[in-house]
Image (tube, rainbow, N blue to C red; front, side, top):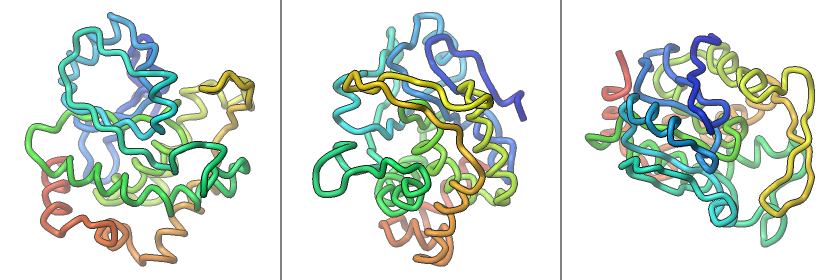
Length: 231
């Protein structure tokens, strides 16, 4: 599946989310943020027919690292997967990666449902879902969408794990500076992480469609997304 990667200068981990289940290629992409997008990268996004960008980052991250456009004309929606600030407030983000994934399944429901509702409307595609580097928040959101389009958990997990290759994490953790200037470690993803998110969804809602319905998505919208994104 490494042929899913597309070289977009200035954007990390950019790849096609389709080609599994009924989700066709060329309509839904996943990536890291566009804050270092180059002019050449923008031209390549335009050639892909980009119409909509779903940004799953917090408002704090957007302020520190705003997406670049270089003249691109697309709709942009900020739909944070996690509570407002990563390390303070009523619900700080878990530092432990294993705890983060069920936490994301719990907190990202409104965000994912909003993505689905927008994808159910005309003229949304092609669309990109991104967070900071495109592995955790993006991974859970894309997994739900791929599941909705009939992909198996094995297929979804194989796509999820490609982020290790796309980010150079296949050889282990990599240090980076976050939006506050603090040095941290970017850690590889493992199959058990995504499994814990999907298990939380199944344990609390039964199915992915019921999870989305719980957060306000209608059956008509679910059907529309399946129709728009499928072969």
